[in-house]
Length: 263
Image 1 (cartoon, rainbow, N blue to C red):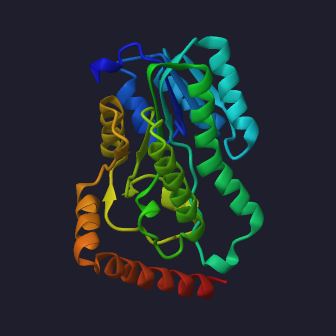
Image 2: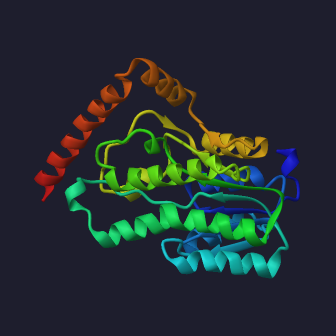
Image 3: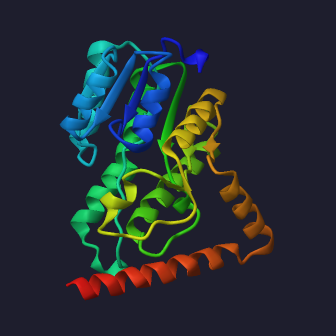
């Protein structure tokens, strides 16, 4: 972490979960931090906990104007950016046939378009000599989980975009992190009493892996060695993904039955 001393770093979705854990780990080494979140209450809590932080910005990244606000702040306060952790995101849980176009539009803007455009704008105008843009993707970019059709499609889109950028041999500035289920408010915000996927990691562990991966310049950051092993075994022997999806399908169907009974 010492290599981050005085580095200028942006963290979106900074008020809770993985974003908050990233702030907690970065703050002892640099106060040149811009914390971005949609919640004013969470930003005020950040100010109390981290009084020397350079900036706090309320921005709704499910709207195009959110990215514009971040870029405007940087333009007014910094000449360059060293790292950006584009962590803001949202999940939706439920049967695929209950989705609507408005929810899908906001979800893709928040999870796909905003982190991509933020990285492109920063790279174009404010990239330091070793600028790195880290997008919080998801293990669901590889493996779909019943109930998360909209959410997993956004993460798969980010992965396909990044792999195309890397294939053009112009992506040394870009990293993707693939956390598995994380012990945050992720599930509560995705829906009422939704089943939690297995296994679950702590947000601090994920944040540590993301920061260290960013420092090392890794393109793909996998906080879970278990998930990497499962990917490897499934690619060679098959069957692992199907077994996992069947377990989650049972939980998903149980959730639907419970929701029907409560109506």
